[in-house]
Image (tube, rainbow over all chains, first blue to last red; front, side, top):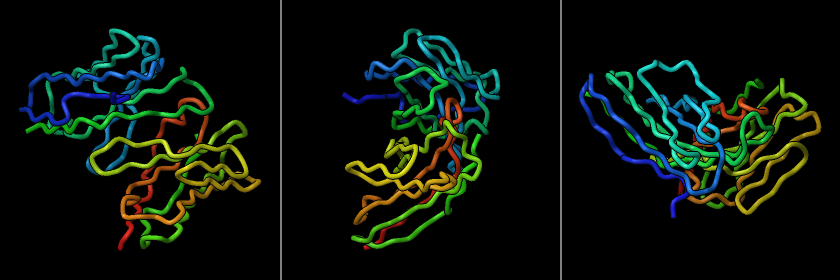
Length: 116
Length: 109
């Protein structure tokens, strides 16, 4: 009964490949997010969806495309993978739509992406 | 967006109280202060959130002085399992989603 679950946990692939990471939340939250944590441990927001609507789209290469089939799911597809894409990708959710004064985020356990 | 400054790392021993201070000099009137904890190979976990004075839950306490330009996360009687990175986030709306570098707390026996 994991609240925010993402798959796969580990993803090893070659440069140039296309891959997807899936995320699901069973908290009934309206908003979901994708974060990237690089080797220096900086945690940066990439995208946010509220009820299937894109509300945050940070400066991310257009090789990254989020897709939200419903408010409980937010998947991340990455085209033409590059070495610099290697990182840990975290999915998260929150109850309310941003902007809000006090969003509380619930994170998944992360997907370690290694591009060779 | 209120910028936060917190120590890069802290060391402690089991059973001690640990206080991690976060500076946020340009905090806005409507901004909340939120702390997260991140263990290796896991996503950050919400610990506590406050606006002013003191907030306490089963995990930690958060002390916020009257000027709100800083806040202190207090962990009572830490154990080895409290070794983690602690993030202080300040803001309203989307800025509450921005993580800084965090404080790496190492608890030793």
